[in-house]
Length: 185
Image 1 (cartoon, rainbow, N blue to C red):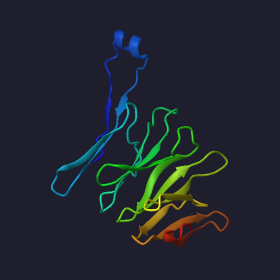
Image 2 (image 1 turned 30 degrees about the vertical axis):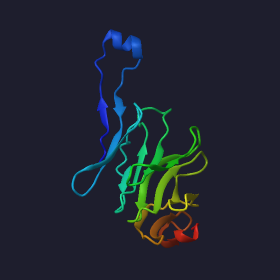
Image 3 (image 1 turned 120 degrees about the vertical axis):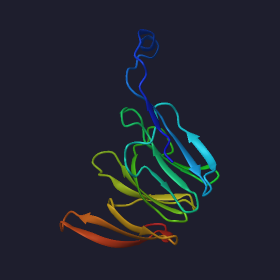
């Protein structure tokens, strides 16, 4: 569950003197519940960081693997980060790993039901366009595709992907299958 909240502080003279900021403050948080409604864990992200407005910034596998993109849509200096957590709440992936790395996770495109395979649309520095990045969370491996897949029918537990992309030269949509278990497209 996305528990991000946006607070608008009262703009008093004392507040503005101390903080010199007059906009809304985002506090991001997620919570994972079991089938009985019990909280398995809760993650609270640093002040000013929430789950962006993208409709696909949060995904949960059938096994309780949680993928979430955090960031701030308001602050151009803020970086989006993809976090992946085990069912226990232990973080198994942060992408990009280093602050200042020139990659910008934009949306979660798909996840296998067992939580092993993950596809994320990410932005890269000019002149590159956004592309899909595939993750094998069991092998702790990822690779950038040579294109952005815009539609995912499924990602199976054994790493087979049915997806589509736009062929710019032929100006048509191409449906394809990718075997992620081999480690590349």
